[in-house]
Length: 480
Image (cartoon, rainbow, N blue to C red; front, top):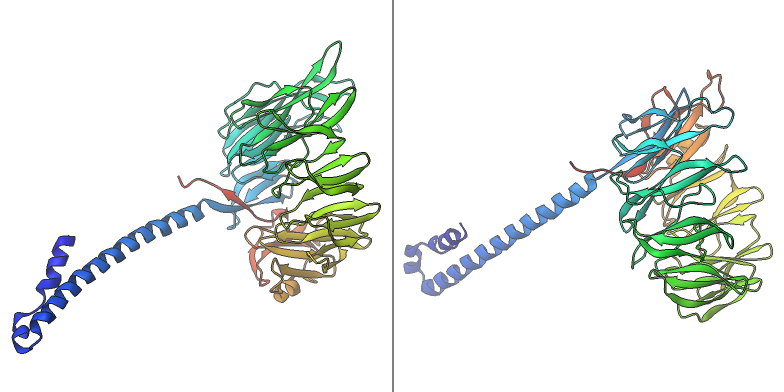
């Protein structure tokens, strides 16, 4: 095909024109070269278009992988999930639902459990198909190195206080067991994880009871269930955030005293056990440590970067600021230990990825920026974020900004203010969920719910059979 096109490009020149013009021979040469050049350019353009089409097709296919689901409650107090077309994807027959990116954890109440409810838990895919049977007393899920891992518990007894004794095992994304039910936890709290550049780990523990010791041994497994840190006498805090340093802070007993240090995922000591407490390293290479009664920060070589002078210290956020406490005062510092923001809030949270932090004052919740300026004053019942938008809400006011503070959403604020009795937050799809109390309802907190876009337009009025709704969450599903 391409050879024929190149031939035609030169063959279109008419010989009679060459006889009429004195520059006919040179014109023919230029035309021939121009024809070859045009054909090459055409070929390149076609190839670019083909490659571009493949890229666009792949991009569109990747977009198709993601859809949105929202949890809804029906008149019987049972939960299910709908899509953006108000189609019930997960039937409203569960007592609790948690949406994750590629799966859904569901709870069903056991019959005849008395005043204290007991539940069976399991896992569905985003189309409602069962991945993990709904028969476990506890189920948790993690994303470790891009792979979903399920932690499942089975009851093996009752302790002296009447609480269930649980053994934990782990299953892969398809529901296949990758460990035995060989791990235990002090409570039914789910184990924590790390997603690091080296490898992700799930922290596990095993109970030991003998003549010399009665307690728990801690270690870590990977997403295949393999022990990457053997269970020994060290203590790894399973509720602490873990950064991307490939290091874990652990506690070991030495001379009758517990001290904290740092190990890698090969169980090798990297920093000595000389701290009274420690938190894990964050992406900026700093970790909070405690010596005596005060907290400071060290680097990966163990150098004290910020002296131990705070009553408490927390992890650094993505913007390079950490929250520390001194007495009743909350302070945000930079990586040099310099004070950036100071306040006497009742409670404050870490900065999010957009550079905002939620704070709680005497009169309600507020939002501050990286300069300490109040984006929303501490006067709201709730502050929601989602889809790079922030919504401050109380019974009389509604304020909305985007993550760049470049646009105000007056029409959305006007649509919500005075028209709805509750706001449930901004979804991943950019819709705000809001509701009006049902005047004819005999129950409290039953609502007629709408999903509203950023312009205040109702995008989805919910069916009357639903009495409460939550924001839409992005979920992943296959293109099969």
